[in-house]
Each structure stands twice: as C-alpha cells, then as structure tokens.
Length: 257
Image: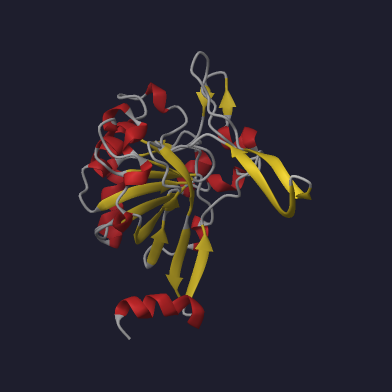
C-alpha cells in the first residue's frame, strides 16, 4: 500500500494506539480567571432546546454558550496583539494542524515549584539528548498539571499574588517562536503562559512571541504521560470559527505499537 493508505489502515488493523488529549467540556471545566477590571469569558453551558418532546418530538438538541478559549482549545495568531494582522482560527493551514509531536517532560520541576519556568537552556539540553525537533512539529510540554483538572481551585492555583502554574521564560518563548519547523505548542495548564506571566517582560511572552510568529498554542491537554518522547502524530481539530481568535479543539494522538 502507499504510505497514506498505510496510515489510514493502521487504526483499524490495531497497529496504532490512539490517545485522546482532550479534557471533557462542561460547566465544571476549569477556565481562566482574570482580575478586575479585566473581562472574563463565559464558562461553558448547555441550554436544552428540545428533548423528544413538543419542541422536538424525535430529537434532542441544545444551544451551547461558551467563550472561545475554554477547556482544551487552540489559540490562533489574532488572539494576541502581536498577531493582530494574522490568521483567525478558520484560516489556519490544515497541513499544520496534523503533524509529528514530541513530548518534553518537565513534571519533576513543576512538582517542586508550581511557578517553574522552562528556559531556553532546558530545550537546548533536550535537543542535545533527543535530537532536533522534526519539521512541522508540535511541542507538547508535560508538567503533570492535568492531575488537577478535576479541581478548579487547584488547577488555577490562585492566591492574593495571582495564579501559580508552570510556564516559560520570555527568552524561551522568543526562542521557540524563532524555530521554523515548529507549528505549535501544547500545554496541560489553562493557558500557554505561566500563571504569573503578567509579571514577565513582555507580559505573557508565549502569547506575544508565539502568536506573533504565526504559530499556534493548545491548552488544557491531558494524557501526555501516556505518550512516548518520539513517534507521536497529533491531529488538532478546532472549530473553524470565522473571525474566531481561538476555539475548543479535539486532539487525538496516534502512536505506533
């Protein structure tokens, strides 16, 4: 068979494992909380329209109400001021939404320090050990933060000084944005920046540099601990909302057995 046919046949033949990296989306899904006077997105909710009754005797359906950046979702370039002239989520190149992924494990450092920041040196050391990032790749950063996904308070880790979740230094964000072979970055936390990234220079550097360089961000991933370092293919499937700055996404990952 030709290679594309081999890929398509692999799941049915049991040759690959498929892991769902997506968190269930409900009213209980942890969502970002911005301090006043900044405005927050609406949490996810369902409103029943019919349920096999008078308004719809043979069917059940709902209206959904949600912000774009809720649960497992993708950030498009126009989400940030540095990418304001870039693409909305409906305009993203499909070829960059499917590709090889590598899993970088920083769960040990994040377990010791919830404000742990990944720096450029960490990534250079990783490449020295594992080799360069593949072309059209997604970098998936494991911090172990998905273990708090059922508990909004623990997941956001808020106190009077802000949110305390792991992320990236400004220098690291700039370095990733400059890697031509990287399509995007995925994290287990509520956003692609650290919880206290407003204090960095520039504020929220992953958003600033990554989206400004026409790269994409995925958040609130789970099951990264089930993936190997190499040999992963991800499919990032956001809703193609015209004018959308982001969208909830389903993210399956395929690993050859």
